[in-house]
Length: 147
Image 1 (cartoon, one colour):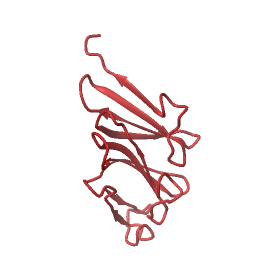
Image 2 (cartoon, one colour; image 1 turned 90 degrees about the vertical axis):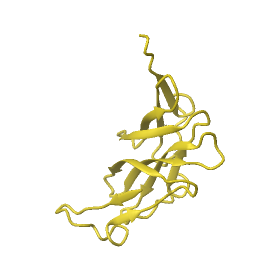
Image 3 (cartoon, one colour; image 1 turned 135 degrees about the horizontal axis):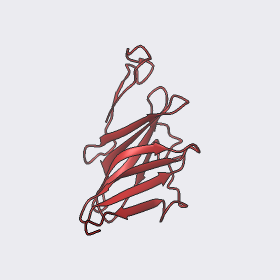
């Protein structure tokens, strides 16, 4: 995952990760892929990504990391800065992230398989699944090609 922080004039923000550029891989077993990014009003950054989780089936999951304004993982978010929303049934590919006014985070993307299904996950501002949303923090909508 590559995150670049720029100043308003387009120069690298060297207070972020020492040189304005952060490269990280969250998974020890595969490449994590960044998909969406949001900068919060306090200067921290949320990055939605897909990653492989060892020991789960099928293992490709939605994830979000929160970075401090200095480009470090925010250890008060999720598990040491990373929240993973696992789905034991299918591989999921997150594509978009939206922020609600109350600080909650919604991730949206596709489940693998047929028929085409879309998965939405809601996390609270601390990276925990919001159990009041759908079933265990997740909503799945299936596209029916016959309608």
